[in-house]
Length: 225
Image 1 (cartoon, helix red, strand yellow):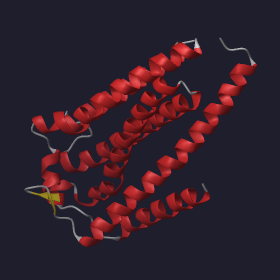
Image 2: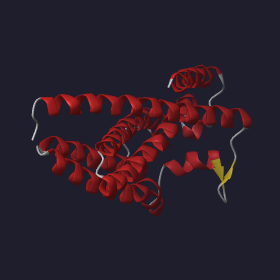
Image 3: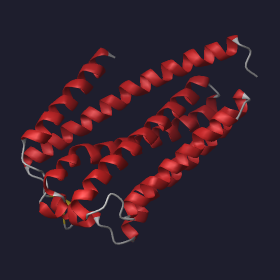
């Protein structure tokens, strides 16, 4: 655990300094200096997608094993996925203001990411409203499995069916045929950022599961139905 903590802190700190000391990674058509947010916006969006997939996997495992720990991991991962998605939306809006002239442009990627945030926000509302523990865990598992099924479509498939403002920025990062065009320094910082936020996710996931265990034990002590 200490290695994960130190790794996350060191890598993210390096990325913060590198993002502002190095030249902007993308050109004027992608926001100029604001494109430095690329090192935060994209990795956090990637980690949020991973979080939703992990939540779905542990939801399936819970339905097979009925072990409370698997439910805790699934819920904690979904919570982190929603949190990373919200931060990705905020950084994306700040970047969009400079690149496209407005914080919100009804771009497909913006819209579908917002839809995912609403979807998982409803999940936590449902989870809080369900009093019986066993019912709550079963409903949560089914909901998260459904979320894991629709997330790839909202992240990758549906946005590609519509003209997106992201395509201009994508051309700077990925050439035709999906061949990377990032310079070596940009690629190094980007990979470092992705690794750093991935370690941060693992760290926060462990904390979330530990907190859920404490809450579960206190609820059982209080005689929760």
